[in-house]
Image (cartoon, rainbow, N blue to C red):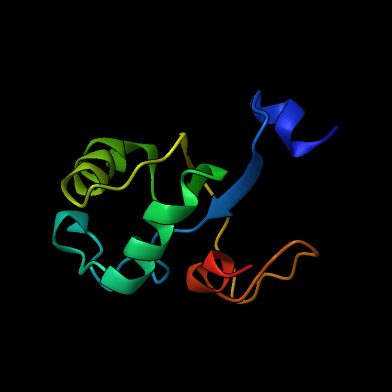
Length: 106
């Protein structure tokens, strides 16, 4: 099954982690205080026109409200927010890239 089919979209699907990717990863348990990475967030704003944006995080479902509020406060548009990613030290995937900002010129 293609990603577009699974998510019900015609756009290419971009899966993005939150902590350490668009914000500081040392804010647990007070995610409302996470420091925003402005360069990545600005790049992401332009990507939201081209991609179906899915945030996939290891945060708990109980953190949904604070996470949605943080994303809203920073003007981040997205299509889905998925919780429950398993913790890991390294993640290797054939479709991965190095950073959000690299996709802007992709």
